[in-house]
Image 1 (cartoon, rainbow, N blue to C red):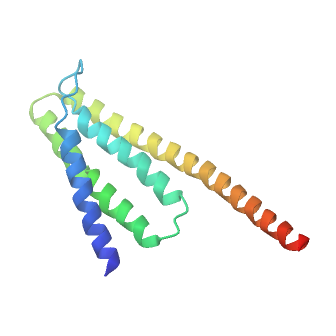
Image 2 (cartoon, rainbow, N blue to C red):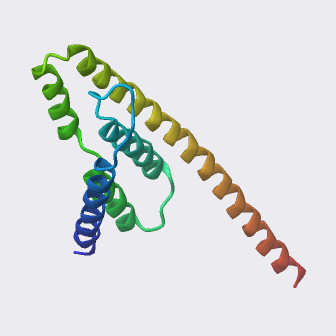
Image 3 (cartoon, rainbow, N blue to C red):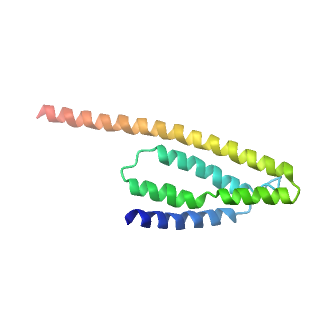
Length: 142
């Protein structure tokens, strides 16, 4: 039951956060590309990869963050709707550019998130081993 509460609360927070970011006015030279959604999805791809690769003590918390918050924060359906709207308006160049940028930047962000998580996990593992060695040495002294 606890995991459903975490997912529900996380979904609420992710949806509100997406709504707030979506409504920020971003100045850009190419007005037809929805940079807010692009930013949301690329950031979400990075965070999702990072958090799924990082070691969590509490699997329910991890589920609440990834499935709840980030699942509601990122939005594939909005991406598809915006691409279709651009095509409907005859702005095929922007549609293809937006779709390509979303895929390439999203994959790149996810890859960087995985690499960063790997480095963090190695550092945490080294710290844990150092602490265990110190505790073991103190035990040998007594």
